[in-house]
Length: 289
Image (tube, rainbow, N blue to C red; front, side, top):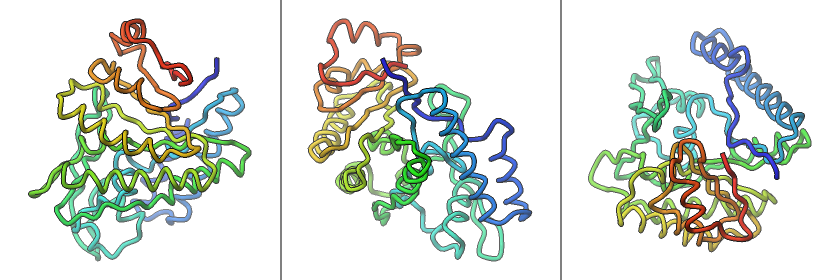
């Protein structure tokens, strides 16, 4: 048996990230000082896990604000009103999270919504009709390399395409079907980058699979992953679920060539029953949490 962490709290034991962000918002520290604090926190958290003997340590779980917003930014899901701000990429990101009022414009933050059954809230991505889905994976790759320089090989994590599509708010005439192929292409490109950089594991978080799924939902999941898993190469894909069981899609999941599947045995009331009834594919790793 090996141990894994799906994602590590990023705020710091003394809430260092919170205080650094507040200082940055008050213009008491520079962007460089903020990013240095973030780098030190990542280093501390990776080393804590390494010293604890964790076998599968995660990277790209660090966020200045919200992992869903991180993924939206990675996929270029940035509404035009934020793109028009003549500010840095960091400030554009933070404008989406908390609004911006200054010499370069005046915009409100994106809406927030409750994150499944937790007290946490996520930033709701807004997809406009002219949004161009394209990959910008610098954050994910850079944080993987940061850990590697510390002698720690991590599994990068990103919100999975099914969950992101279901959480997005489509603000005009187009919907999921109009953007599906572009989403798939972007995630294919990410998997190719993982292969190019010898990243052996990529964790795709899909908590939206714990909801009640319609036939259309199941067809969407299958279309996405039938396409993505063709391109996996030498990169092991971990499908990670949480906040419940995946009773409506379990058989589909275990019959796909995921290298690992993460299941919730705590809040997933039927998880044990599903494994007993349908089994678990030989050759896959079960990430039981």
